[in-house]
Image (cartoon, rainbow, N blue to C red; front, side, top):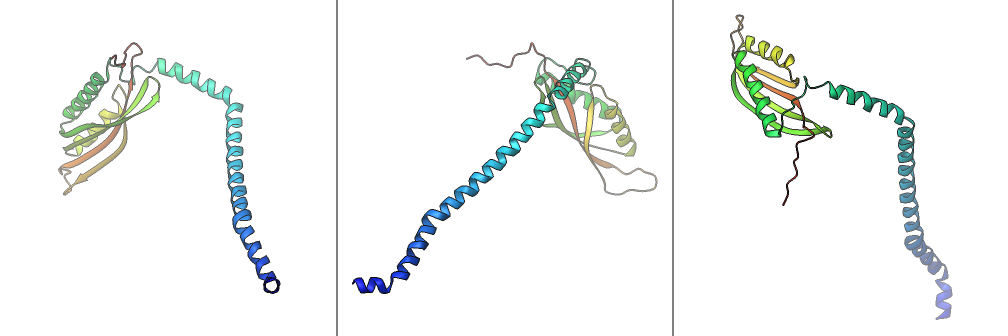
Length: 192
């Protein structure tokens, strides 16, 4: 038996080396690679944090400037007492602008909101209406000059036919944004 083991000694050493590589060296190499990736990520985070800390005075100054602008922004923001009042007011204002522009309203809807500051939210709306070219121009002008501010983010105009007299009926889809500043004295807490 010993003679047979000596005969296959080099095969056994090779098998032992492969087992050692497979069960010890490969996991250690993978662990080292993972640790290197984690170290690189931590170094990037440290660099970002260091750059933020170096620029903090600039950020504080920008924050103070924004606070001053926010105090003077009542003409540009909807400032109703509640979110429901805000939605009704915004929708009524847009409906009024469309009616003054001689447009047929198809649909006005809210498409979600985004928190900008602790008391300021950006609300997305979609407006669908029909009318001639004069309606489109009047509506666009009215929305751009409206107070509180209404921002046209996307627009899509479509007509089935268009002639030289510009009397085609257009279908318009506008995606607009409005800003709502919640009053600090309003509480949304539910007690129970």
